[in-house]
Image: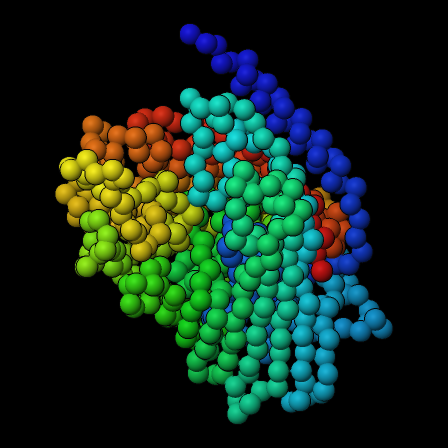
Length: 540
C-alpha cells in the first residue's frame, strides 16, 4: 500500500510557507485615505462573491441592502441617498473639509451639483484587490463557490495549485436626485471582473487572469417614501435578508454552503418604528424565475426584528466594517419548475414541481459597541439555518448533480439525448422518469472578534458551514442505471476558515486566511482541500 503521509506533510508545509510569505509581502502596501460607516449604521460592502453578488444599504428596508462588497445594508431609517462606498459617509466633501477625528473615518468621493431640493449627486466607491491563493488540490479556480473537491484517486486530487488574481476589484456609483412629491429617487450601479468567462483549460490562463470580463453586480432604482419603498433592478435577494447577515472572510462570497444570491427583482418594503429601540422590517419581492419556462416569477418575503440600542461590530465579506444591531430574521422563497418531459426530443409536454426555502438568521453582539468606530474588544456572532428543495442555486451548493441519461432500450446510435430547459442541480428524474426537486439543508455560524490593541484595527474571524441533501442518494442509488454518477455527485459539503485582518491605513486592509473544504461523494469517498490565501485591498 502506498504511504501518503509524506506528500500530505509536504502540502501542509508548502501551504503554511506560501501564506506567511505572501502575507508578509502584502503588509508593505500603503494608502492614505480612511474608512468609515454608513449613516444608518448598516453593513457596508460585503466581499467579493463567487461569480455573482450585490451592495447593502443603510436602511431598515431590505430594498436597501444591496452591496455585496461595497455599500451599506439595512438597520435604520432609510437615508435620502443611496449607500456610499464601503464604509463611507453618504455626504459630499471638499478638499477644504477636515478629516473626521476617528482614525477609521474618511470623506466620500462625492460630486454634487445644485443645492437643497435641486441637488444632484453621485458617489464613486469600490476597491482594488490583489489575492494570492494556494490550494493542496487542483479543485478550484480563484473562487471556491459550489465547486467540488477533486477526488483523491485522481491526479487533480493529489497535486496543488497556485493562483494570483485581481478579478475581485470593484467599481460602483451611487446616484442621488431631487425628491419629487415626497418620493426620494436614487440608483446604484456596481460592477466587478467576475463576468461570465470559461476558466482554464477552456480558455487560456493568460486571458482568464489578465483580461477578465467586466460584469454587473448591482443595478437598481429605488424610490423611497414614508409609506413603502420600491426597488426595481438587480441586487441581493430578500431570502436570507442578504447581506445583513453576511459572514466575514478573506474567501470570496458566497462561501461554500452559504445562502447567497443576487437577482433581478421588483421589491416592496417598509420599516416600522425605524427610529425606535425596536424596529420591524418587512419586505416582499417578485424575482427573476430560476427557470424562465416556469412562466411565473419566484416569490420572496421576509420579516426582521432589530434591537437598535444593542449593536455589534461586523464586516460583511472583507471590507466595510460597520455597527449593526442585534437582529433576528425569517424569510422564505417559493418557485415553480416545468422541466421538459424525460423523453427524446422534441418534448411535447413538461413535468411540474414546486421548490421552496426557509431561512432563519441571527446577528448577536456578545460584546456590544457604541458605534462603528468603537471596535476594540468587540465580539459578534452571525448564524444562519436554511432548508428547502430546488434551491441549490441560492445556497452555493449543488453537489455536481446532473440529469441522468435517457434510457436507450433500442440501442440507437447515436443514443437519444435529453434536452433540458433548466439548469443542473435544481431538479432531477428518478429511475421511473418522475421529476423531483433536490432537497438541501445548510447551516452557517461565524464569529468576529476585534482585538483591543490598535483600537480594533486588528481582528479575527472564523466560519463553519455545512450542506446536506437528503434525496440525492435516492435519485442516484448504488447499483442503479447511473453508477458512473456516484463518483461525480456529492450529497454533503463542509467548509471552515480562520481569518486575520489588519487595517494598515484607513484605506488599506490586509488579510490572511486558512481554509478547509471537504465533500462526501455518493460512493463514500471524502476528499478534502486546504487553501491558504493572502489579500490586500485598497478601498476608495
